[in-house]
Image (cartoon, rainbow, N blue to C red):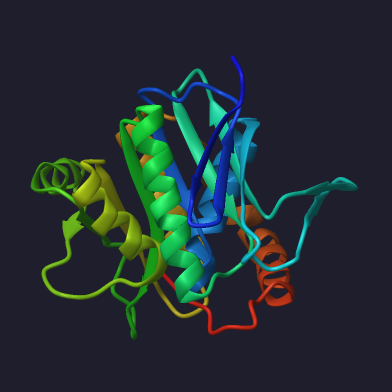
Length: 240
């Protein structure tokens, strides 16, 4: 199958695989770095293949390096067995870039026939808050979908950045989008990531080990934090 290209306002999405019927998991940097920690764990645990990239002249000039090989900072991986794809980013985005990127992802998902987008983020709960996982969705049926797996709908609140764009554009473009929020406890972000991995395993039957995430989380978190600190945009970063 030939590579497919999608472009929305200077954001170019290139996918070299058929993702029709897949669930697309999106992990962008935000509060606690839960998104990229979860994304990297899924990619490495499932030995997922690189199938696409997302690029834009607005993105920071940075390249991730793995085992000596340079990689684009925003990448798409896929697991054909489980029919999931993962978007991972190790750079932060300005508000304008976040809007363009979210719109481009929704456009690509619509044309590819993606079943559902699951955006991963964190929510800070000062003083604790337990292991509750919160959620929101672009459509009422997806709220019910989250509740079936014990995810608590956010009653009132706001979200920003790419997560907000995915939710709002998902509504207008009739793409199913859910936001899954791990509860952050101070700097124990990896524990929130582990809880989300457990929940995704339950929702999507991924056969993902999450105990290993607790063991490797500090290393992954340091790695992602370093890359993000080196790749901050000149504009104010948006978290979501």
